[in-house]
Image (cartoon, rainbow, N blue to C red; front, top):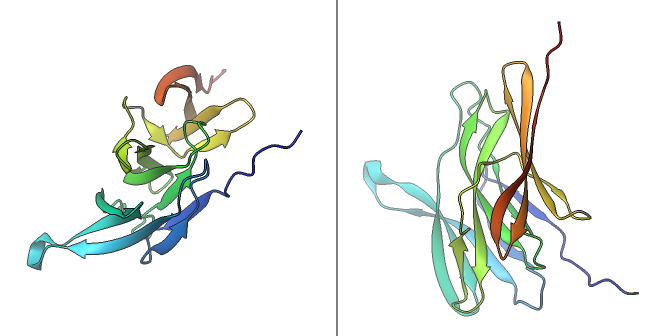
Length: 171
């Protein structure tokens, strides 16, 4: 048996400008990702410009730096979050616990309209990890001395909570 070759995951730090071509897999054309600065004066903001299939769209890039760790801006993640064979885009939206927790909004490719759209359901995606064998998106976050996790499976691009994990403190 020959498995289809999947494009490698891409992680692009927001601490420097992005100008990168990315393979999506699933016989899709490459996507060009680039950070751009929009606005003027006090209303300057960074955006992610996506060029795909002759079209262009932008997604907001929030400043996610934490006061305790200003360099913890997170990274843009291009990975198959929903395990459908086509890579999605994870955009960092917030940071917590001194830079330990990085939170993401997820965008998947709408092939019909050739653009990226927000995932159909909101899930708290923090520090994502991928179990491709079992098709599980693993999220972990820290609060105080404890780590917590919510793991998701997907049905037609919609995440559903598969399991929760929390530390049990024994006296």
